[in-house]
Image (cartoon, rainbow, N blue to C red):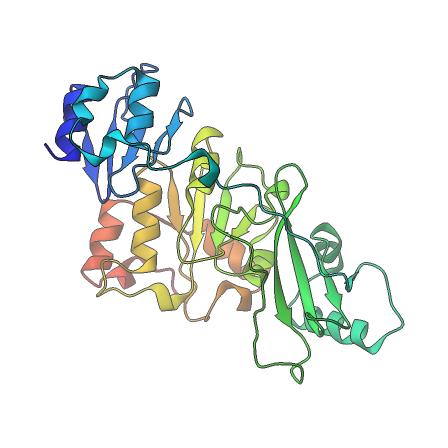
Amino acid sequence: MDLVDILRRAFNEEGYIKGDEIAFFCPKHDHHKRKLCINLITQKCHCWICDLSARSIHSLFKKLKFDTSLLKNTHYHVEEIFEENKQQAQIVKLPDEFLPLCYKQKSIFYNQALAYLRSRNVEDLQILRNKIGYCESGEYRGRIIFPSFDSNGKLNYFVTRLFLSSESRQKHKNPTAERQNIIFNEQNIDFSKPITICEGIFDSFVCGRNSIPLLGSSVYENLIEKCVKQKCPEIFLVLDPDTYKFEDNNSKLVRICKKLLQYDLTVKFIDVRPYKDVGEMSKDEFISRRSSAMTVDDRFLFNIKMGEMNDYSTPC
């Protein structure tokens, strides 16, 4: 038997397959939807209702008191993830040369850093609220530092932008720490209210306080879990136009939309054309577009596939 057959026999139901995942009704509770998701590639298992999780099929079977003999003569009967391989909390540290921009400095670096942020329409209150700083020396010399803090106020990542063009051609220089599953500046996010998912740090300043910039090409499960558990009423999706690849059914836009819809989240799409990103918009323009955002559903995805999203776009 393959893994799908084994799981169907153990759960005594067909389950629901989508992509690399199969979902079942969780035996731990009587929720009316299939919320126990199992990745058929990585074996990672997670229930979005009761928080049951496992790092392998064997571990899941033990937790649910399923018959592990079903796994006999398969490679699933061995715990593939050992205790010592569990990911430990990463330690992220701001550069020693970090200087907060909320404290005025008698320095040309300070003036140039502030002028750069002004040119990107970053306000004083945003500098203070987001603890933005810069470096005058060291590895991050000539760079703005945007720290990220988790829900407990602990530093978990930071991103940088070059404000001295003479220093380097490398626009972005971020720490080597793992960024997967980081919700940027989670301490500022209220998931009980609508959130906005955008591409970059400057986009988030235009989108407002309850916005989250992506740190990669997908929406990580940690973010989805927060939205599901805290019953986020709406998610506004604001991606750059270069993701509107109508001919590609596996484009970034389509993948993210499908991922969010998979968990019954309410998603609305904001078209930013003809701007290259939302960071070029005024706040008033963004608010106007948000008020006429398109609901993401099967019809929306179908029209993307057919290359007809123009029929649903906000006039530009």
